[in-house]
Amino acid sequence: MMDRERLIEKITDEVWRRVRDEVATSGHRGTEIAELIGAGADRVGLRPGGLAPAEQVAALIDHTLLKPDATRAQVEALCAEAARHRFKSVCVNPTWVAHAARKLTGSGVAVCTVIGFPLGANVPEIKAAEARRAQDEGAAELDMVINVGRLKSGEHDAVRDDIAAVTGVRRRGNIVKVILETCLLSDDEKRIACQLARAAGADFVKTSTGFSTGGATVDDIRLMREAVGSALGVKASGGVRNRDDLVAMVRAGASRIGASAGVKIVSESRS
Image (cartoon, rainbow, N blue to C red; front, side, top):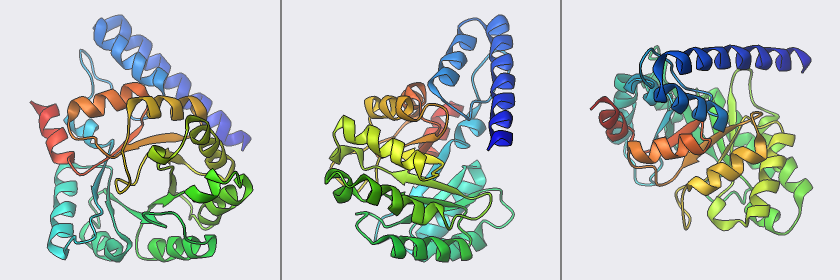
């Protein structure tokens, strides 16, 4: 743990050095970058005279297709778009993980899938089995749904153990994101969920499945970033439809974006 902490400190120092250099040479643009880093962003590209280009915006995005009626052809199109635009990952349902992994071999695009989706009400053993199978088939990122009912019942140990069932089978180099389904939670419950995710060893907290009553909001991203500090990533998912939405979420503290509109967002960034 201490080695990891020293590495994080070293990286943070280097990021801030680059921010100071940008501020000195780029006026208000440097200030914008400093705001992003200060909010907790962990993927901000720096270049003289401006913010990150479209390719670096793409590297924030999990290109997502989780509709139950998604077809093989649609998944293949998703993978082709992700490879072309160099998105961070594709996020697909577990049934398509192996196929997406084959399509994306050598592309540099990761395969993300969902665990306990969309309700989060499976028992921990089932979530762990899903996570193992998904990793066997090529998933490098696992977005698991928190047990919302247990959280709202005040059964915090059960929620932590449920998350730990998935982080406990995470393979080296892989990532676990915990979906809170923020639209169903009070602010206090959101904060508690963030702390439980951190205690259970998660890498990210994430707002939404996109299948409940609401998606990501700027206020929720800000709250989640404050709750986890710089220890975890924060993923905004649900309702991020254009570049302005993405910028607002990153300014609030998001370090990853889940969106089905990734191609549109990147196109807007280029223009």
